[in-house]
Image 1 (cartoon, rainbow, N blue to C red):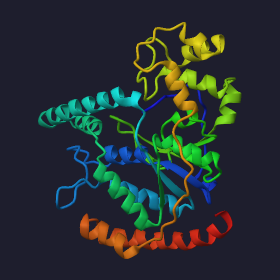
Image 2: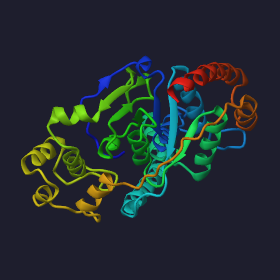
Image 3: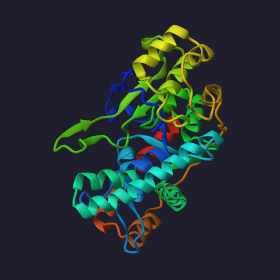
Length: 340
């Protein structure tokens, strides 16, 4: 979710080879929700489950797609969200309500045999539980992949790691990282490949995209502060939907004409509980901590036990991926001597 800057910001399409040997701080919640919503039965909308009925879509996506990143020479560091700001409470409550409604409509679509609506509402009903988060952290550790716990928003912590020179870029599908000040944002890390368009029998090829904040600001002629103001006008996680009647182009024109926060919001009708100043200040100075990125070692036997014995994954496919992981691990071990 978050702000949508796609109409204003031009991304540079790149290849995975361009990211080889790069350490990227990946927004963990962003990709976990992606896996939970997309890895589902196309007819029933049901997520993957093990023999005990427990959901495993997040485990499947995290294992196979992270392995693919490592196979391509990337060094992922997953960053997990912490406590959201108090003024995000209403947004979270609204999302819970939407998911509950989606569950009801999902069941109705199943009864009606409407496959397109089944999948759409099933995705809308996606929930990420605390147990799923802990499973994901355990899986990453067994894979030898680092993760960091953020005090608040994961993208803010990922940006902090970037500012400290501990990672090369932030990896997320959301544009909010730019508002937090990430100088490099990589999109499509875990959705690259052949992708079916919603409700169409048509496929497109999705590749990673690089957005560099300095270039974006220079091209559109705004400061980072003004980009935040523009984002608030369009709508962020803290004021979903943005100011009524104002889209990206109108917001851009208003920010260019008025310049500052006070001047811009004197021109609009603000209907949200948090003030524009509160949201602006949060993007400028979010909770983030200095953190050492932990190092974990690949544990093939325990990893296989978790995936095959506990969650009923295919032994042949797991063993094949494990061999590739072991190879990428040996390569990474030698790389770390030079890139740290």
